[in-house]
Length: 265
Image (cartoon, rainbow, N blue to C red; front, side):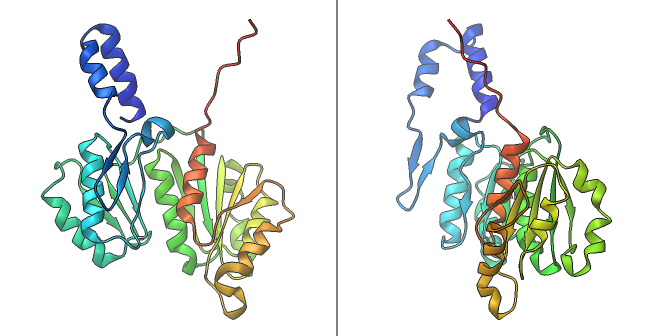
């Protein structure tokens, strides 16, 4: 059950519209589904607010469709599938067309190499998640971050191709940087964008190194090391090409969990 479903579930029990025995039966169901090739976590949305995200690389289209179907059958209203190529996505779409309800269709997002089921959650975060990328070649990773944040209920602003080779392009967007609640800075090559943005912003900056670059970029290691050694305060770093991780973390920052103060009694 997703978090809003849990609240409704508890209200039904409190109002007497859902018998205690029926409620017990639902709560006693196994929190995972063993499909043989995957053990699907059915309880993740109640623990973390987001249902299990499917990593598409290395899975067959049949396996992906089976996991999606299982999640939908257990009332997951929105599902993310990352690292999904176009051919596999078309196969998944055909497989799911016969299994999903009409209002829970599958959509492929080619720029992000992602698939989604369901609509984005309402944008109810504290503010804007700003996704910046240094060059056009970094857009796939930036889009993975942006789409992830959107699906998790965030207002997202995208500003692309504002790398330090033409720093005036970035400085002309200073208003967006100043107004953001959290920034995702995506860059390959030497990875300098994150440090520059970190020196301009007053909000957390999540740096994403990409594997874009010439020989001595070493598949993103140069950008990764540069970001890890940033002298700008407030910059944190995720793994190479990990747009999903950055978008997820940005959503957590934009949706802080406010816990009650402990009792002094």
